[in-house]
Amino acid sequence: MTDQPWMGDATSLVEAFRAGERSPVEELDATLAAIDASGLNCVSFTDPERARAAAGRADVSKPFGGVPFGIKELSNYEGWPSTEASLVFRDRLAGFTETQLLRAQNDGGLVPFGLTTASEFGGLNVSVTKLNGVTHNPWQHGRTAGGSSGGSAAAVAGGLCTLASGGDGGGSIRIPAGFCGLPGMKGTAGRIPRGPHTSIHPMTVVTGVMARSIRDIARYYDVTCGYDPRDPYSLPRHDRWEAELGTFRDRLRGRRMAIVVDLGTAEVLPEVAEVVQQAAEQLAADAGLELVELDFTAPKLGFDWAMGNLASLRAELADHWPDCAEDLTKEMAFGMQLGEGEYDMEMAARAEAARTAANETLADAFESVDFLVSATNPDVAFPAEVGANTRVGDRKVGLENNGALTIPYNIYGNPSLSIPIQTVNDLPVGMQVATRHHEDALLLELGNIVESERPWALTAPLAPC
Image 1 (cartoon, helix red, strand yellow):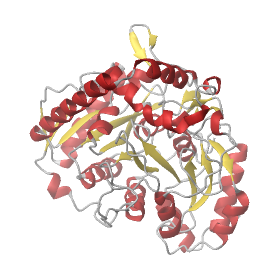
Image 2 (cartoon, rainbow, N blue to C red):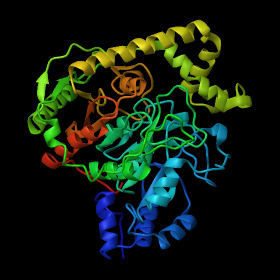
Image 3 (tube, helix red, strand yellow):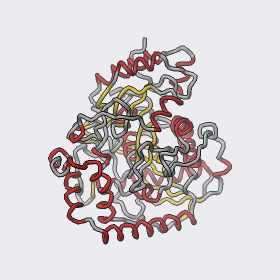
């Protein structure tokens, strides 16, 4: 009898299933029991009956056969709530299942058990909503798990499940991965399809997974990546992500890496900056990379860009707006009200010109270097209910500063990987490595090197929480 969920990664769990050491039904029951006992508040909905039926017929020969799987509540899974983590849609049900999730379930063999909490409409990089309340960081209760995939990260790092889906439109995989001590990959835009009913604007969102190991991320890519006609920007299939781990070390030697801990814009906690610098230098030595100096400042797209991004939310709210303003998180309501009064064609033109200039800036950088390293988050996990423009002493803490290191790669579309390194004040620190478009495999190789040389804790010290 399995009395607690698996504390290793998903790949080793499948191996245990195949060896007869555990069964998918036992593992699912352990996951559901752990969710019921958890104080993390990271799962907003479970469907035990449907999940047990799937676990009972699981084919453990599949890549993730029988592994319990949390689905980020901003996603659509047919028959389950489709709330967008908002009171506005608390009674809405999904009428379809997203392509990524169908592939994960049908091709990968994963067993969806329920929905993990997220920030409202994915609009904030923290884990507090009016619908669900506070999702806690498994390393320290009362600290943020990050957002918008905060519930998925907390569930995986907190020992409730080994995999949960994620999405990243401004850091929403990497930020919670960094805060919760997990690896977090934002692939090249289009790597995993986003259909059906793909929302194109503003072309910054990618889908992915919250996992405990690099090989789990690579295997998830094997299962879910590849072109789909309902996402016209999805990329051709490549199905050797896991098989190629460990084979690219010769391709890495002699490549150039620049360390710009703050990307020239963020206010980084000095202790975080120090451990990121040390970890980056160690990675360069381990991988045979040449360290070079780079004068780089990530362009800020500013107010104009932020207002334009609200257009898709306006379409989502449709006739609910403005009567639903009281149901929205205050930051989302404020943004909507401001956008309706300020956004016009002139502002749209300025935002597009700024984006073009930003693309040129990063293209110039990657003509000089192969990898650009920074912190993932400027800080360790701060108190869960910290809002925008909060300061501790003379330093910014909170929403605006926190996205400064991740948002640029969503705008440019480049792949970037958050790698767990050390802890500061007993909380995890992530190191972010970015590279050119379509060279995702090189990032996974670098993450694999760090994991091999300096393994991170697969779960928080007190898991299951």
